Length: 391
Ligand code: PHB
Image (tube, rainbow, N blue to C red; front, side, top):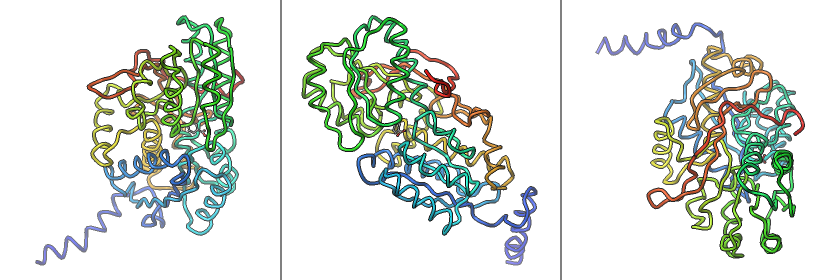
């Protein structure tokens, strides 16, 4: 009885002694504002981000270097005015030390000046336009850039007997990156663009364009739609019979998100895309990640989930490195140059740009054990964002 009592009394002392690097704020929780779309057209991506953060914290606990981690989840519905207002509230009222999430580029950009002003890290877990990390010295990205995958699929298409391509891209910044960087490489490799269509981000109707593209008889359709919209796109693609007409889908991997892929049906078979993650990626780390995600959420993780999982991992690792010190400059410094093994493969944070450096894989949709997967067949190692300079 007495021993039990003693342990209870001295345990906190040992706990504090074990954390030598920080002063007074040791017991204070570190709050992270997770700003993601949980309603509206991009809701499925916000769900993947929230799931991934939850999974990581269930695996790694909620205390890092003596600091309790508290995540405040807020829905911005992928509307940048909401993002800005929510970020402001989180910083001023809730006193968050980090903002994270950001399902679309305009949301990430809307929060950038606030991160700079408050001098706190902004961890971009999904948005993929190259310029984002240039908008604040406090932005660090764990997703990807469209330029990273678009240059690779552009070269691949030109070298693999694809001559005529029609493009369909969502009409906003990442879609424009996807288009420009693809075109630069594909045209340089001798390819020809026979039609170019841009569709709106909100409530896109692809059908009228798809009919026109079918008539143009391209070898392939180059597609960028943001994560979450691939299912609807593929439904209209097969309804219009473009698969039957032998038109191949190529693009960055967003359209073939593993989260939705299995419900797309056989029209998706044979699509070749370049991307940083496939649920079929062969590594023990990924096998464990996919199994744990499936167990917790009864669904398959896609690339969006991996951006979230690595985003919270980066925060944990940085906080360990600073010994629990959470001022923004110290955390961002700790993040620069950090390397780790992600479910997607080896990654690092480029210390010069704060953008992610990662393998890009070319993959083809195939049926494996009765399910559709992006099966990786070529790897480009340690790809930096080519979008920091013009294409
Ligand atoms: C973006 O808005 O930057 C974005 C969103 C989803 C993606 C890619 C880019 O899959």
